[in-house]
Amino acid sequence: MATSSITHNFVVSNPKSVKRFVAAIDEADRDRTPKQTLPGRQLTDPKEILALMAKRKK
Image (cartoon, rainbow, N blue to C red):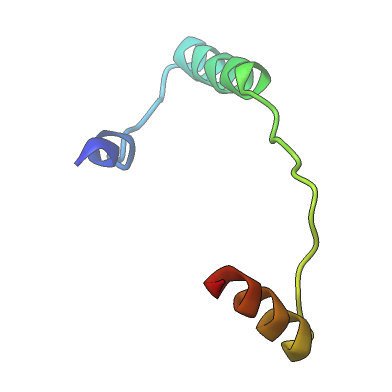
């Protein structure tokens, strides 16, 4: 499984290694792509949900 490598426990005890590890995490956080917001809304009214599903079947 691809995610098994990131779930492995490890210990960082050298202070320089700790600083490099934290810097790498911060850099990864800055480099990620922002979440794309999509237009829409959440349907909670059962009548609206039924109307939407009826359109889908047509």
